[in-house]
Length: 342
Image (cartoon, rainbow, N blue to C red; front, side, top):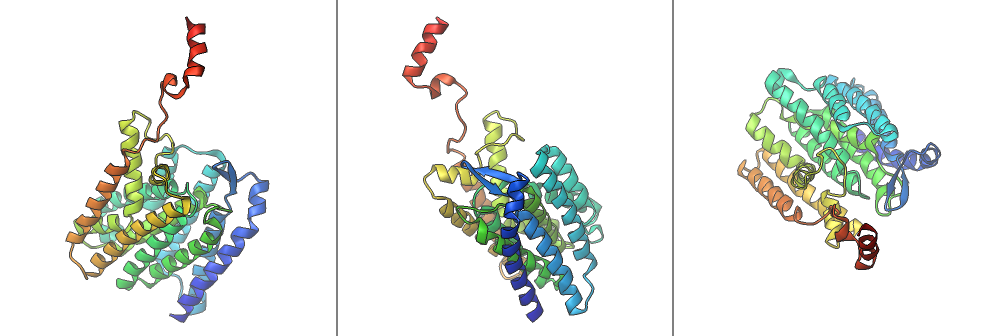
């Protein structure tokens, strides 16, 4: 127990330090993200990945217990996803390429022995989709880190209930590393995760949740997994729904996420992160309670219903610019155009 607390504290401090040290190299290499006319170095992702992997491996060595097979597989697969995310940060890969690469990594870690082949393949798709969902929430200061900390901690509790000590330690160290990253990512952000950090974090969290639920009923497991990641799922569902309704390409980016819409309603950047973090915490709390058997499965329907209401409500917030130039130009600008066209 003491070693676990120490490992989490070390992960927090070292991630905060490494993220700060890598800011200058990230700027020199132009590994940056533009947020509201600001260039934010993408050094947080590298720091989170490196420190999490190093601390988890060192923890097994100090405890004198070799790192479990599941944890080793998650670390290796998460490292592969991190490299894929780094390539995306540099060259902007297509979404289908990211999905295919992540699905291939997920296919190597899903416990088919406990889930069965059919359910295991569904888990592969879910892990890949949620990984891209975590990448999608990494667009606002403090949001991806806050949601990641809350979700990783919840999955760690679920793993501890199942006496999966290795998975629980991995999740606690990841949550601590993301907390250290948040020290630099709160508004106004000085570093960001980028795909190199958000994708492996989402991948490890989703895969850890699958391990914790492996062997349970598919219906209840689907509900628990959704509750644990309700904020990310709601954000992804909102984006897909709004783009389809607007006639836009589903894979085309845009300012149409939950955070974007809440900002248009007048909330501040820190307020958005705190509100969405609280929403993520509520879903995680229900998922953990149901997983532990402390509340009934009916509570999962409340999470699903609340997420649906939120998605339908904020989908009415206008975020797409009109395609008709006459609707966005003032009369003084339109008048000369009419003369030239006439």
